Length: 164
Image (cartoon, rainbow, N blue to C red; front, top):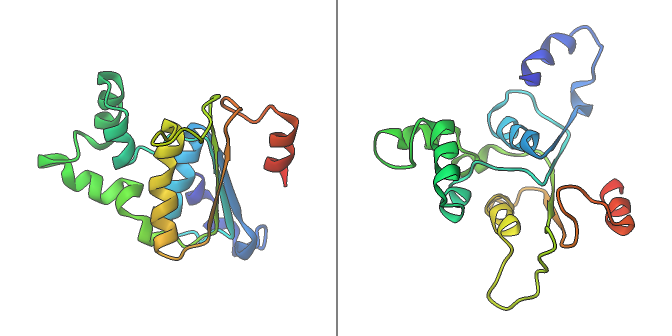
């Protein structure tokens, strides 16, 4: 991963280790969250936008056979039995306490508004696991939800908000 390429550049003065940030969109957002929990590199800031998290919550929320196969392939099996240790070691769900970097999370709503009583859009529900966990740990995290946008912010107001 990128993180292994950074440390050799620090002593050469090519990169200021106190000013390195990391950003991920879609699948690479998972890499950002994974690196925040598992890398020896300390990042100054991070952004993960509309990403899969391969989290415990997503595993249970997205319980269709194709999703379950994908999650099982990530961790070698389900989050119980012989493969539980893999989940505990590698899933961001169980490693939130290792994240100290300020994280900006951006979630797209795919047209699902967040105003139906008792209903939380699936993408937003998936992101709440990391967001709530980091909040409870008093870690710096913000989450922005763009209900009208699909996989990337297209509305001018959302595009402007994500750039700021």
